[in-house]
Image: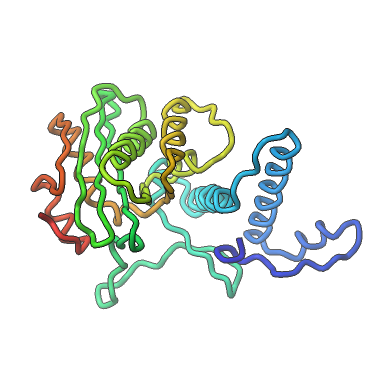
Length: 276
């Protein structure tokens, strides 16, 4: 966790109350990260005690980072859209604090856009759209190879959808099912919904109203293919966002192989990826 959090490398053994001394010497955000790490260690210990497989270290790291990110986003801005998780957090390892990314001025270099997956991998970007007054929605997904070329683009119209979170997780499950069908390479799944990615990465039993869909996504991630689920900012998810809006506004359900609808041309240009 020290790779992403400003945790101390060594904690001095001061006797039976070493933990209280360590927490007392930490600042507020370091204390949060330490307690969350200890909490996760205790969870893994309980899994082993009850003869269950210990969660992979990478899964615990992704879960803790996503969970704490969501707490810090809410702390910085109580009015933020917590379902989308659009406010990125950056950890300052020198000062041991967290802060939002500064806004880029017009005379500064823009933020890096969509990035290609590693050689031999594919990247699946997904997004969901939701209309609360109608309880309808849409999903959008695009799978691209390590050269940025589209393997498929797709959208669906959701005739019934109870929440924006449901739309986001449906986008993950539908997109991953298509990806497993159209490529035999490992897949990185990216979504701008922090809550959705956290639920899919979480190894605990999900008891939310979207538990059934989350379980489908988890099952698909274990189909003999390496799958990584990551949260990204909204601005890096433009193509799938356009597809999700197309699915909802046009009531469109379609899959385009090796190409995409003209509506995503601008988003592809902004990403710097080829549009067939």
